Image (tube, rainbow over all chains, first blue to last red; front, side, top):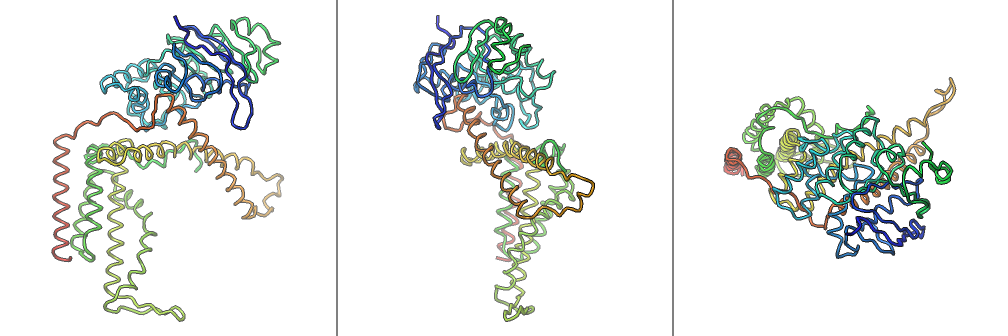
Length: 236
Length: 272
């Protein structure tokens, strides 16, 4: 059996030489739900962008059994559903239908399969029948749901979410948490929302200045206010 | 004036009318054909122009957009007609009047004036057709119509992205302007006596805002490209196949074409 995510000794520096990731190593088993926490600038988003090869740095990444290389980008991107922080970045098509169909079309599925995937994905986020709506007329919460549907339509093995609850009102946030709880995929969620982390994700990786500070149960991390405070987080 | 979101940029008015219900491809093709007919009709073929006007006005009435709405929007194009004004003075023919501007003499001719009025009338007709098209067709449908007539896919994809992010960018510009307004307070009760900020200062602020918008748009384009790559984008533009055109769509297309060809032939035969 392979691990869903297997990151070994990953390094990354931005073009200006500023190091963003230093010797990051961790593994996520299939079906595991893991949080990625840390202060702003800790390297969380940078790390997430490595998981499907948008950014590449020295180190080894094995995603769903494929070692990351230019040749395996296709299957890896189909296996890793990446939900970006700002849904306006993710919903780039004129209508909801075209956005959700984008991934399946590029995976080379037939028209009927694409339509079926779109239907199922929109149903699973509670947005059935909204296919013809225009993306910029959606509310923030709806945009988030459609953004998640647009990756669910690819039937990924792993869901990677960057700050999923940012910018949502309490009801939108609650709906999103319920939605995420119902999804069976392996999950890696970067967030500042420790309450959501405590509720949803049993394991937490704490990242600061590009390094893994701690990796263990969420309950244990949240019970350690000194560690949280030392890394720009606040105990619940 | 400052709203939370920008929706007024979208000209589409969702109404229940035969024109709205018509297939976007038929509307797009007929609009382009109408504009071509208008521009190919010879100068001063006034009866044909009147018939073309009757045609576009009928469609406006059918579309339930309201003549006032279309004419108000069409008036935006008026200043551009002035670009054709020199025609009145540069075409040789029967002298109408002579204008003297210092040492500079200009003579208007009847033929020149006719040409200028024809160009003005033609632009007015064309802009009305375009307004009816964009007001009665949603932009996603318009993009599909462009794909259907085999416009380059990359170009259509660029139109789509531009339209999608125009609103996001306009929202960002609104936020920047609000932030500027929030910091432009004047302290004290006698603050009104303070002079308006200088033009140079305002220009500098506007320049800064334009630069900041550019940088944000640039960063966003990077993130969008990342989001596209994440969903297996490989540089080639692909989309779902289009459904085929209905018999009534074909019929409307044929009817519209026949009418336009008839009008154009009339114009060319009698005034060409």
